[in-house]
Length: 171
Ligand SMILES: [Cu+2]
Image: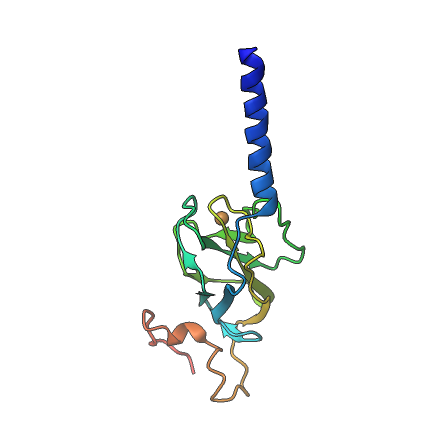
């Protein structure tokens, strides 16, 4: 009799845990995730800082389940939609910032790339509703276009970072 009860309780707990994950961790409806930089459509030469913006929620470590907080994920060149009931994949195109980082120095191959941010809960699941940024496109070049206007400060973005030397330009 005792064994049956234990088994029943275990089954119920498993069901409850499954239901909680299937529903996702709740996020405030006004939460918004966005790129501080780069901007959508930017032309960029060399490594660049990608900075993550989050409104109406907080950033914490993976594994911390404080309400209304999570950690960033950067999706690079991901076309398939995220599965809302499964953890965010962990591979070369899905980057987890489990220590609560809010920026990353990226170095991508020349060509067009898409970038998208997704906030994940303590267990790397998307929130409900999902807290996901607009997908932006950047063009990585080996040389900045000649005709780039003075306002086109995105090209050669790394040179504008105070942590990097501006010495050594070839033109
Ligand atoms: Cu994660």
